[in-house]
Image (cartoon, rainbow, N blue to C red; front, side):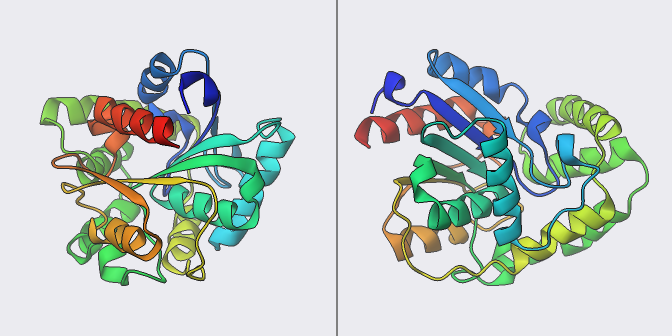
Length: 256
């Protein structure tokens, strides 16, 4: 598969995040695939759907996402599905139920409750920090704490990103209840251990402070999938190492 054989992309973000949080990565992906059509899709309760109530199961979130993709005309032909964290769980469920929709998937720092314990899927060292983030009233302070949790960039870069993310929140806020419902959905997602049929690339990072890299290893081992590992990036690899990520995706698609 070359650049012209991967013309349609659909991108899904993770927990309490929306399409705006992809930032400059969309442009980076478009440069790598100049002939591609790239779409982003918000999950229920986030982004353009922030007024709606998020389901509290991955199965229902995936159903919502597919219905919107069909409505928007994103599935006229199979897509390359690129998904981060909780978005990766949605992508996994999507591949299990509707494999005909998807030509291939790239799953970034994701996990499955059927393969990894809860304290790896959400590192126990961060439980207190996450509670403080959920309870914070100052938007910039909260977004700064989130960026520090998912990125390993310099303090100056993190502050710049946090300001952009605070603007996103002011424009399309995700409610505490929707965030909590997504956490419940992610925590309880235990798909059966039958393999999916579309080709899958796993990407993870040893510097991930939020989710243990062991979770991607567990998926790789169970299903014998290709796993590429970044040595220093944080949980948000598209933010910390976009060029590395594009390189690994290109290699994967050329082999697929």
